[in-house]
Picture 1 (cartoon, rainbow over the protein chains, first blue to last red):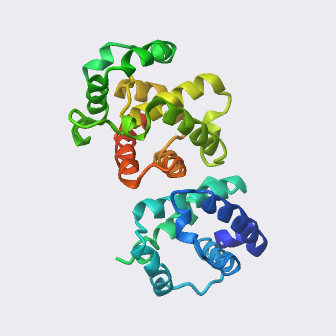
Picture 2 (cartoon, one colour):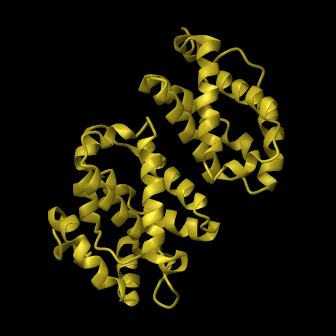
Length: 121
Length: 168
């Protein structure tokens, strides 16, 4: 069974998605404070890793990474509402790129499965 | 929900322009209407100024409508539900919606919300689309500098309309 990553078109599709996704997240005043002072290039690499992971592509993400990588944000007040925003931006990004609804649902459920780790609970 | 009997859904937006200025001066009425829509979970608005008043009333709602509308229409996951919609009528609806969730003077009822979205539910409107609208509302309010506690109150009111909007 091929992954969503493969169905979408692999790395090229992910690169396109990173651009769109990143623009949406940074354009959202409710969540963009969590990206203040962040190295943009490193962050783009992380977004790519995240999108590759949620689409089932080759990645080395672990629950521990997710937990450790967001702990400082949880201390800044990161909560379910912010996580919901990221999920919405992901859905919007995929819809904008013409990804079919069933694939969007699959990607979102993988992203949803990281919630507890991201929010450190 | 006795208000339902007052104003049938189909004339709601036609009379909105007339009703709004009349009700604007009556803050206690605004409080009553807020509780009516939000149900028992809503914070009591009788004693203190409503969120609507705290954030600056009609002018703030106008500013919010612009930002909110732009965000929603730019969202490819939800904008198909606005295809073929009369933009001017829609702006009035958005204004009424934002006024309602901010606790301002409005005449929204659960029945209106249900009837007004039934055709969208048939088109596939579900929880995920509702989540997107909440997200755009939060993003809009944050962009306008509304403090987090007021955002949460507003989102709580918006959340209370979910079952009606999704017709269940």
